Image 1 (cartoon, one colour):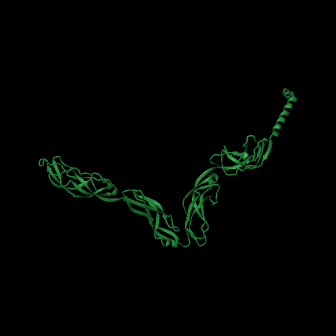
Image 2 (cartoon, rainbow, N blue to C red):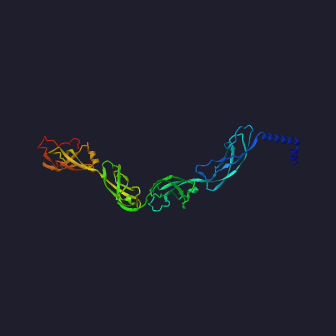
Image 3 (cartoon, rainbow, N blue to C red):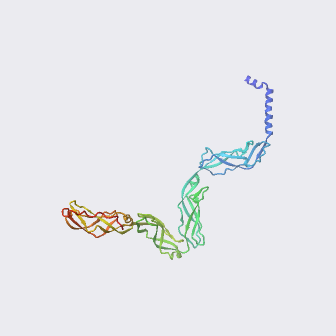
Length: 419
């Protein structure tokens, strides 16, 4: 202790002089610069926020900054001279309020920030969330003397995006409709509003799509009528097929509308049902294509079954004959070497026969020497059938090798068939 005290008081006049010199130098440095207050607004920015973070409160601005700047700075001091921010790195967005320290820096390195207000702000942070909700049309008050049908909305669901704590409360996207006293049918694009279970509109929440088309028939003299259904079949089936039958379930539909709109209506058409390129049965649930102001009672959809079948036809060909079941010790002669045949089947299969060698057969198995009538047969692809041949049967003359040493076997198949 004695030694420490001795060290402190040793050469104390010199040490006091050093302290005084340092004080004078610091005072000179301070006097060489200008200490000022900036009272403009510097918006507080968000730094290091992750993509799923949303700030629910206003960050505000720094309203007073005390700074030191050299007298020869030659720079106009305004809001762009400073940058104020809060750092969200490591901050968990929970939907609750959190206090964050504000940082203020000068863009010009020769300006030193000494103090500012506020030093901290309180923000509410949450995560971004998205979910799907049903779309529902909501009618406003209907003017006296008018009646409305069921609203039709183009679309069933919408995606709502926003703070998770708010999105969790959204129960549906409402399309709110105002019915005009003129009695004109509603057919317009309506903005969707995200609402909670009590119908309160919630913010900040984005809705996609932002708008949907809503149709509402408005009646002044409401009537109903039962109409037969007419399916609207469009397109051409695959090559070789045709429409065999069309079934509609239910076969009739009840509609409603003003008396003058229903007066000339004798049927209800469906939306188009395409059979383009089809080669098998088409089953489809479709809506109705009703005139404006007329609406179906019930679901407004019907089940349509379209059955297809191969397009059938006949073609006539000239074909050669081949004997089957011949014996080597016998000779065979035909009364004709070619016949005309009529073949039936789908047009696609018949088209494939064109240019193909068509051979018919005559079965001579077991025939002895003599003249015989033999029926003609054909080995055709599945779906084709031999409808007729001329002549049929044909005569086959069977002789022995010894009796006709110079005889030759029956004729070979003819050239390619021609329709």
